[in-house]
Image (tube, rainbow, N blue to C red; front, side, top):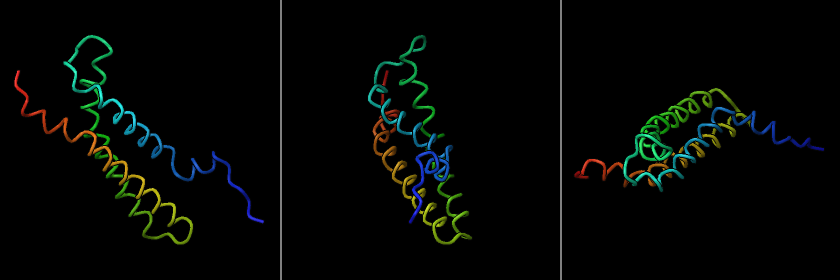
Length: 115
C-alpha cells in the first residue's frame, strides 16, 4: 500500500522559498489593481503605488532564475525528482506569464504619462 504524504512533506518537496516567491508574486498581482492611483509618499497607499511596482521586476527575474535552476537540477535527476522539477518549472512559468499580463499595461503607460 502506498504511503500518503502529508501537506508539510509536499511543501518541503516543492520548496518553501519557491512557494514564498510565488506567494509574493500573487500579492503583487493583487496590488496591481491599486497601482494606478495617485502616488502617495506618506501613508499605506505607497505600498501599491511605489513599493509594488519596484518589486515586480525583482520578483520577475527571481522567478526566471528559479526556472533556470530547476532546469540545472533536473538535468541529473530521474523519476519522481525529475517530475518535481517539471512541475516547478510549469508553475514558475505560469506565474511569470500571469504577472506579465497583469502588470504590462502599468509599465507601458508609465513612460507615456504626463504630469
